[in-house]
Length: 327
Ligand code: NDP
Image (tube, rainbow, N blue to C red):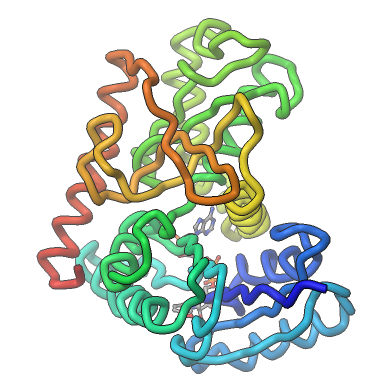
């Protein structure tokens, strides 16, 4: 029998945490043969709510769940951990300036990066979900010099899944028939969902839809889907965000299918003109080890301008956190 894999979830008492923990414990993320032990990191005032979630986890009697730890101490939460899902972040409050938001998140992701560096397992994989996710990942990564850069990632997978469904509906096919989707850049309104490389039936999706739908309907629908859900539900997308986190880690750990790829934000080594070090959305594959950027794709002028605009925003966020002394 395998020994349990430690999985740490921050912001565990939040909405996404509530949708995430039960699926991890059921085996949806690491597979039906991998026992897990969960570490729930929360801020002190939310510990009691985390206890409540842990009680419900107990009451599910998940055979794969071998232990639950609840703590407000990042060093304890990340000690020996193999998968860290950084969900807890400081949301933008009314009237909050961007610098204040970045500062507040620096106060969360810097110590978490340090704690990961100090105590995580050698095979640690980090996924940042809490927004601004790409830049929060950059902060954590820059305080974890002993962890290989490629172990840090930020989530583009929800945007990716949203894009798959929009295309599937448009073309009247199943979502599993849409392949090679890419979300480039920042997980923000500037993201670029790319239909030129996405395929249905072995042909570019861009060739099967009209350009007006692509630029005026598809791209804004995907980019603004979070706001549309808040508007409809009266609460932000939590279950689909948690599902995307599960998909991201599962693809990373178990690998991506041959002849397909997924979207993830990982530290650039200069691919596609993205400045080195930025944590940007790319088309990526995994063979169960590290993410690998799919190289050699032709980028047309339309795509180039959109990738550049989103990457510019990432550069500005990086410059802002640098200016604040956070990296
Ligand atoms: P959620 O669980 O709904 O969201 C958590 C984070 O995920 C937010 O930063 C949110 O960004 C982000 N996110 C990313 N993608 C999505 C998406 N598609 N839809 C919605 N959110 C998305 O927030 P809650 O307020 O319910 O819970 C946060 C928890 O984190 C609280 O329990 C709080 O106590 C905790 N926390 C823990 C910390 C720690 O462990 N050290 C530090 C800070 C907070 P956005 O704000 O842009 O929606």
